[in-house]
Image (cartoon, rainbow, N blue to C red; front, top):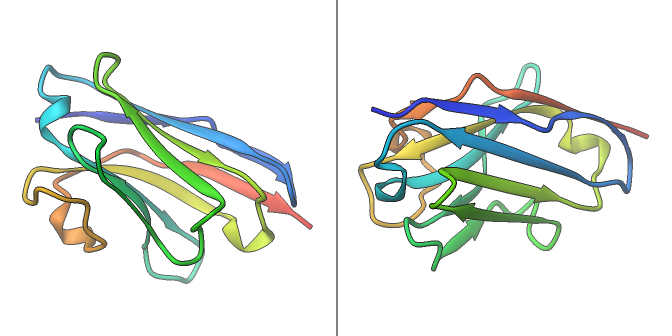
Length: 125
């Protein structure tokens, strides 16, 4: 089992940047594919980015490609989401999630076993 705690959310103007962090408990962090999802009010939870266990493979949702970068540090049990060129439509609660079911990142939220509590990102226009 792993527990996930996100941090780094906040209020930022359009065009700005934020870096989210997700700290994981436990000694098996490197055995999980990690992902970031987001959910805006009244909308479905949306895949944002995913990274393989050894960080050799990354995958992004179409709406964030070229603007967001996912990375991980297995020595620190932490996964990051660098968000640049933020837009008002990026406003959402951002969740990190751990996936023990697949070898590569997937967009399917049901492949992810563990979730953090979420961190709010608000982008003003």
